[in-house]
Image (cartoon, rainbow, N blue to C red):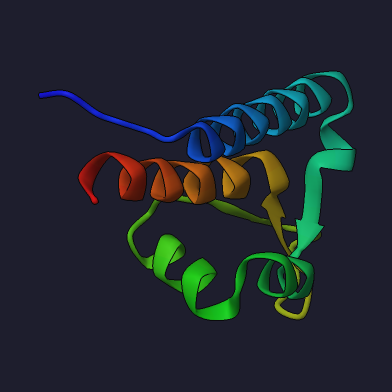
Length: 94
């Protein structure tokens, strides 16, 4: 199977992978700065998409504490990876 991308798509793909690499590097160096709140995840990636990814177990969450009302936190790098993989899937299977 051959995949053909125009120059614009290839440029965007390279930029997306570079930003994903930077996010993963930040996650390794400073794990706390990688975590974002559920509200921020919804704002950046869309509430419906984040909920779908969570229900499909593509992303994991952690809580800020042990009580019920504690913040739900997501890994920005993990969210970006799922987002970029969906975009890449569109390029390949379009």
